[in-house]
Length: 360
Image 1 (cartoon, helix red, strand yellow):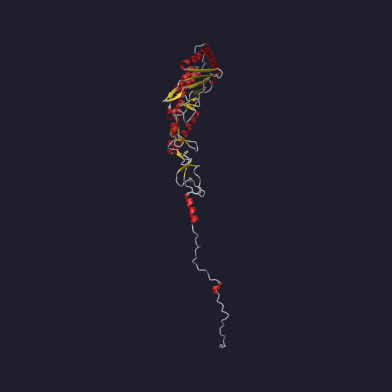
Image 2 (cartoon, helix red, strand yellow):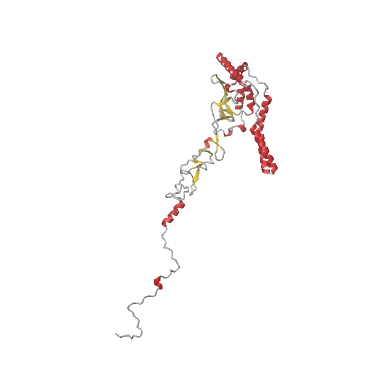
């Protein structure tokens, strides 16, 4: 930047930066320990001791594994803290106006595009296009908000031509999510450069992090950058090869995708059903219920609203011939008329005793 207007802009920006640095609390930064992780480590240690005392071998082994994993996780924050303690000066001082001007002037050498906004108090540089493992992520804007120098992260990283990860649109770089950069091992150097007013070095260090890829700390690995995760098996699948379940909108790979035999929509296993008669896969809309037993049955297998089993039972009941009532083999008890002696006929009279028959 050689023109007079540009020099004036640099001087005004350097003055604004110096005023902001002067407002900062220049006391040494407090020492912050990973308290939550240390408390969890102590809790695991107590559990391990109790399991050993009571002879719970399986629980003891499980606690040992968790202790080992937690110690592994603690190595990084403790190592970072040790590095900060070794390099932090006891009496921090603010940067001079000359240093700030020279740092601002050096930005045009390192970056093709530098933008300064006194109104919004932002200083933005644009990197060259960044390619990681044959994936073109495009250029990035690194925007420093100098009115937020007292914040933990007073800058944002924006993709100029976003090629976001297929599984998360807020991830525009394996180490950038929602415009926040995961600085990793570079954080101590970035923080020190900004504290000392070495603005040019601050931007260069961030660019170096953007040009670096660490699969173990990536928000989305590059190998699945243009792929999505199957909701059923969790395998990564290329976005063009994935399907979306019509029932729950989950993403599916080809192996986990079912389709409705009638309407042909894509379905996951939980959103599809088998016809109880033919066992063909359908969506719920295309699989009504039997009017008798309420089992799900496809329309091809329904007959008059009934599944084959219920329809056969209905036909059997309709075509069945009426049967005579069963005959009781036990004889009926005699009626009173059968037990009473018959009355003699009136026109047949017996001979009277002592009377002779009179011939006609």
